[in-house]
Every structure is written in C-alpha cells, then in structure tokens.
Length: 376
Image (cartoon, rainbow, N blue to C red; front, side, top):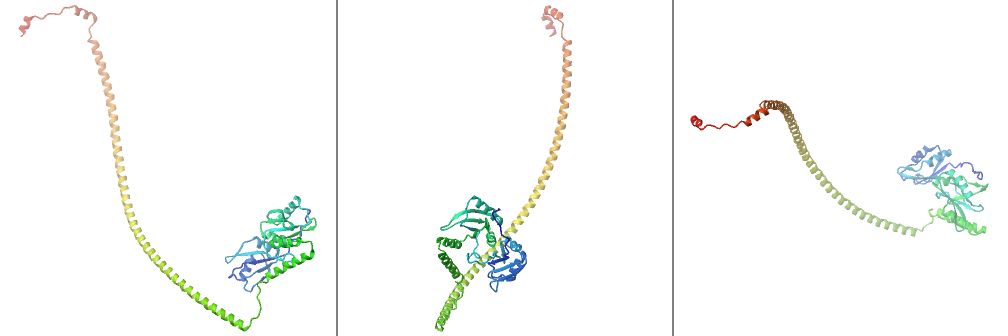
C-alpha cells in the first residue's frame, strides 16, 4: 500500500433520514437518534417533521453508531438513513442516489493485476468487498468496485480525493446518471461540446427537481367561476356516488352482520349441545370407571383365592409325593427281603444228585386193587 496516500478521516457528521411515519412526532425522532450520540443540531424540511430530517452529531462516532444500528424502525415504520453527502456540480445526483457500486474512471492509469489487487486491499478498509473488476462502456473504461453496503460507498465519496501513485482517482457512484455524464464527456474531445452536454444534463436535472413546484399563474374571474362551478358539480357527483357506495356498503355490512349473528347463534346452540353431550358422556365415563374398579377388585380377590387354592393343592401334592416315595421305598425293601427268603428256601429243599439217581432206579409201586376196594 505504499503507492496509496489515504486522506484523513472525513469530518462530515450529518445523517439524512426519510420515510418517517405520518403519525410520528419530531421529538420522537430526535429521542430515537439521541441514543447513538450527542446531537449538535437538526433540521426538519417540513414543519410537521414528516419530510427529510438532517441530524448533525458532535463527533464521527455518533454517525458510525447510527449507521451500524440499521435498520431503524419507529412507530412501525422502516426509516431510511444515510450519510448526508454535499451537492457537487460534477455529479448533481450523487447526494441523492444510493448504490453499493463504485465507479473509478480509467483515464491514464495502466490497469493490470497489481493495480486491481492494490484497489482491493485499499477499499477493503471500508468494509466487505464483493468484487473489483475492469469494465467497458461505450466511450470510456472504468473499474467497478462492488461493496456489501451502500454506506461503504458513501464513506468513500466523503473521503475523496483518493490517490494512486500520487495521482487523484476519478471516483464516483456507479449510477446510470454518472455513466451518461461520462459517456457524453468522452464521446467527443471538443471541450465546448463537453460543457454544452454537461450544462444540458444539469438543466434537465434542475428541471426535474423543480417540476413539482407550485405555479403562480393568475386566472381570470370567468375562468375562476367556471372552475368553481366545475368543482361544485364534481363535488356533487362525487358526493352522490359516495352516498350510493356508502348505502351499498352499509347494506352489505348489515347482511354480513345478520349472517354472522345467525352463524353465532348456531355456533352457540351447537356449543350448548356439545356441552350437554360432554356432560352425559362424562357421567357415563365415571359410571364405567366405577364398574371397572369394582371388577378389578373382584378380579384381584379371585386371583388371591386362586393363589391360595393353588398353594394348598401344591402342598398336598408335595405331601402325597413324599408319602408315595416312602411307601415305594418300603415296598422295595420288603420285596428284596421276600426274594432273599425264597432263594434260601429253594436252596435247602433241593435233593442231591445221588438220591435223585437211586430214586430214579427204584421201580414204581403198583397199587393193589383189593386194597382199593376195601378202602372203598
């Protein structure tokens, strides 16, 4: 940045405020803007304070706080606040127009990447910078610098002049008016034609700025009477139309009110029916709730009895099972004793092999028939 000689801070301490609400009082406006700093003086462009308001602070910090606190709202109305820029003949609308773009005319400067980089670094001091690019118009070339806020552009304009390599930069707001002026200026190299074109533009601007001024042309009495008669006729016709329209509106309003009353009565009746139905359902619900509670108590009592019976049955079953197991053990023991006794008895009564042999060799005795008969 050694190629730049940044000027000292601006001493413009005035802000311009517009879009003030119709019902907002002047003291309300002053009270609102006194929060940002001490007000040195103020100027209302209209007696009721509903036009433009110019407020001057005692220091630059008050202006900066006021601008950084945007948006401003007062009595429900959005206020438009900007720094007050003095009027100049070179750019007659620059104190009115608002834009976020800055225009730097390239006349005798060699535009390269280094130059654009230096511009970006320099103007980034004023805030967020979106773009810095080379552009071309019909009759001249320029550098377009895009900022994030219109207040940054106003600060750059107030801090003029700006220098590059100790040469002043031709800086202005990038508006259609300034582009037209520069196109006409560079369209011809004849200085006289340039002055004529600029004077023509200034005349057009002055004509537009004074187009709303009141005319003081005098009127004759006949024309005045005709105008009064015309206005009376127009007023009468307007009054008749107003009465007819008002009657129609009153009839429409009465009809709408009747419909609304009927709807309100139906809604009230429906609400009463719903309340009665709700009361009935609430009684039934309470009755069913009591029945449910009684059934729950009966169910719990039955469950308790079932539990007691089940416990008693399980105890009996356990006792029977134990007794059965004991009887089975005794039966098994006695059965083993019986088997043991039978085994011993059969072993003692069994004959030897010699006796069996002799017995088998002895012939069987034949019974005597006589003995049998005698016995009979």
